[in-house]
Image 1: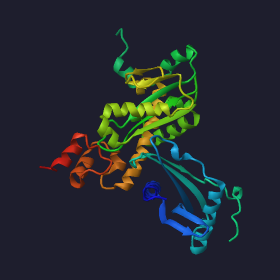
Image 2: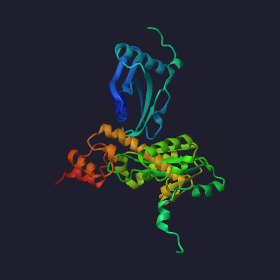
Image 3: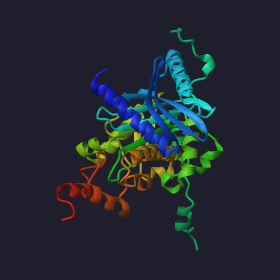
Length: 131
Length: 221
């Protein structure tokens, strides 16, 4: 990943975090990493722990970031969410995984931000290979 | 008195399907309404929306659809969701501040409208556009003065565009919290002008607009 793409992704995550804050979410952590996967944003709202995957796309028009996530990516997010809960045992029981799609112009201006709540249901996801 | 009292009639005027009906009667099915918001503000994008409503739609909530400026924000957001759910297609075009500075606000507004139309699937057979004619698009269309007050499809587009732009400005408020974007959405209010003088322009200010340009040149001198 080039520095440019990394910066773009980070800017998308900043905008996603700003969106969540404007909706009254508390941001608990950013960029949580574990061997099974990574979580972009971990937030809390109304007693529910929310794991957020941010998809940032750069283009000239609205709608580019609405690309679907693969079930495998979903499995990695779920595994990372489990790891976060293991590491933070006082976290709320209620959990969900959201996706925020951010469309930016080539210069990094916001075209659209779409927040999809409950983007995955856990029973549809594949098992990850055992390490 | 012989004539009805026009001012009162104007107050209760609601947008109708009159323009659409003329086109539907000619056999056209896909008629888009197009409107734009955010020409005036000193910051943020200009946003346009295009909406194709089902021909002869009779949704009850259509009675509440009117020029977005006349609706309170929660009502507008609820209507935007209904429009998105029931419209045959919705397209949005966003032109950011740099492009507004480069093109000028009128061409930038037309570009946003052209982008909103281009984002529609299916492609509309005809477009009704608030105020403008758009020489740059291939779709047959005409402009309607006061379209957002008169024509339901344009009023629906005005609601979608306003809600989309307000959402963008809410996020920018969290990113650039010194200016009060949450309250004025970039429009020129006393609060905004005061913050602009105090902090100078931020990356989403329109540098071609006089109050912003004046801050760049020499401050309050």
